[in-house]
Amino acid sequence: MPSKKQTYRGISNRTKQLINGAESMTVDFKRTAQVDSEDLVAFANSESGGTLLLGVDEYEGTDGHQKGKIVGCQVSDKHKLNIINKALSCFPPVEIEVIVENTAAQAFYRIEIPSSPFKPHCTARGTYKIRENGRNKAIEPQQLLSIFLSMETGRFLERFKGATEELESKLIHTFELVNDQKDMLSDNLLSLDKHVDEIKQSLNNKLMEIFGKAITANLNAEEALDFSENTFEIAEDIKEDIDHTNLRLLKIEKMLEQIYRQQKQ
Image (tube, rainbow, N blue to C red; front, side):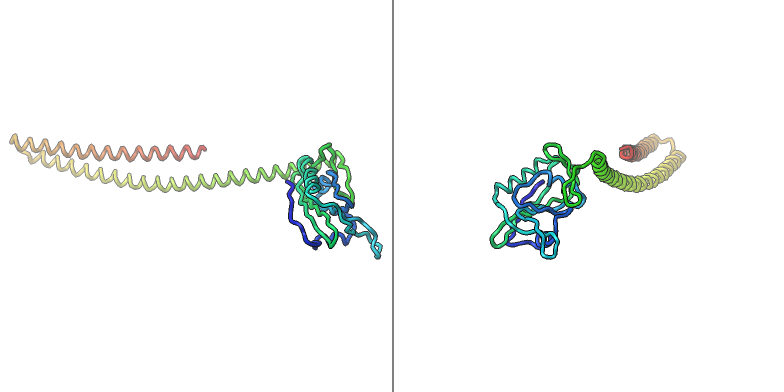
């Protein structure tokens, strides 16, 4: 979008360099503060952009070469706003920098128009121009198509690059997540396997204990009652171990389902 920059109390080095030469592919001199939108789109559509110097006339120097001569022009907020509105009226709007510079007695404008990433631009009337050989030239249909295809290809490649980078980032994140879950799952499986071995050993010991008590138990009713109660307690312990193991298996099953859903996404 157009933007207004600072005011120079003097002549910038850039302007000194530009007026030391003739009008060219990248610079144009104009005696008045009047700007044609065709000048703006012509520079915006070119590969290098360009500069408009308003209040600068062209003359032939003593060495026979054309140069710029500062003659000054009317400088005011009204004129500056008019220049900006000309840029805004283009389609799409042309980005410019409006800079005021001064000699001891005269003020003038320097307008910088960079090569646009949104080309091709046209005027409000639909006129397409480009800067070539120090003048504005109408863009031929084939050239216009070439510019349009070139810019669309560049924009497509930028969007494609952004999409692939985003996809790559998501894949890396997914792989990291799967690896983290895999490590966690592996730890849980090892822990579960160890727990199952402990239950087997405990069950075997308790069964041996029951078997031994069954052999040594006599027919005394009181001893038989104690034997039954002890056996019941052992059975309850075994049941608790089995319930605990089932809970561990359910947690691992949920974890596997979560990993599967994340991989599908």
